[in-house]
Image (cartoon, rainbow, N blue to C red; front, side, top):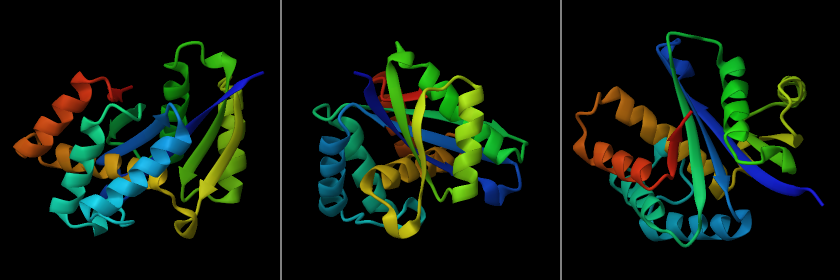
Length: 191
């Protein structure tokens, strides 16, 4: 029986007119337990169900520190940072493909891919493009604002975190420190 792996995808940077574009893909080892854990941390940290840009900076940092320092609920966050381009759809698809291909024995899995804000037409387009890239996806689903869950909000938080880090050019020592710990612990992987 083919196993399923879940990918939760978000992006940021379209408002920069191509200056920077970041795509993050969260791949949980056990989707249901991580989802439940993230919901609890959203409450405890005070971040709530707010996306990164709407949450207070101290609350969102508390949220990320808690999630990135725990080891009980394993996950990986793959991300790509692009500069000077407006090829948003292509780069999102490419990042998903690179994420899937970086997973050992990925062809033994069927991937359930959830993308924040993806419309029906684009779902078919993403599916066709990933199929051409030999990515074994079973489902590409867009997540609307009212359907957002804690895993999509986590992908959003990672995009916001990486964008803030990039835009601060390393001057924000707290973000820099959190980034280094996440990379060192193999939670955050640039692809």
